Structures are given as C-alpha cells and as structure tokens.
Amino acid sequence: MTAEGVEDEETAAALRAMGCELAQGYLYGAATEFPQYAVQKLRVAV
Image 1 (cartoon, one colour):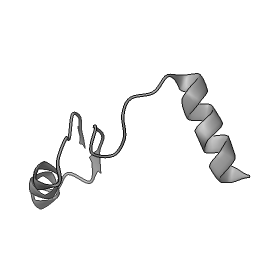
Image 2: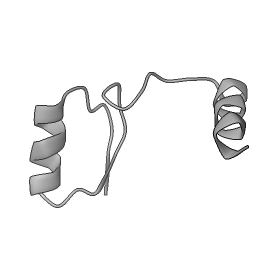
Image 3: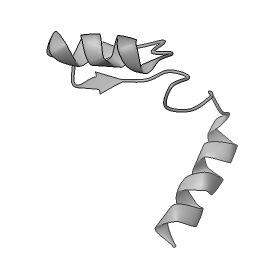
Image 4: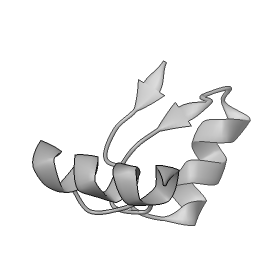
C-alpha cells in the first residue's frame, strides 16, 4: 500500500503504525515535472 498526500510527520507516523511502508506527499517534497526530477536524480547519482 502507498499513501498519497502525506503533509506532516504526525500523519506519516500514524500510517507507519498501520503498516504503511510507502508514502508520498508534501512532507517529502513538492511535486515536480519529470525533467526536473530527472536532473535532480542525475546530480545525486554523479
């Protein structure tokens, strides 16, 4: 299961307590278009 729209640590902790291991949302980073995402990942990988 993947949770979407996680905005704060309290929500993330509650989801983890319910067994949810994957989450996405503003807590982890704002949404980006794929080209910008790819550039960010390439910078990290190099």
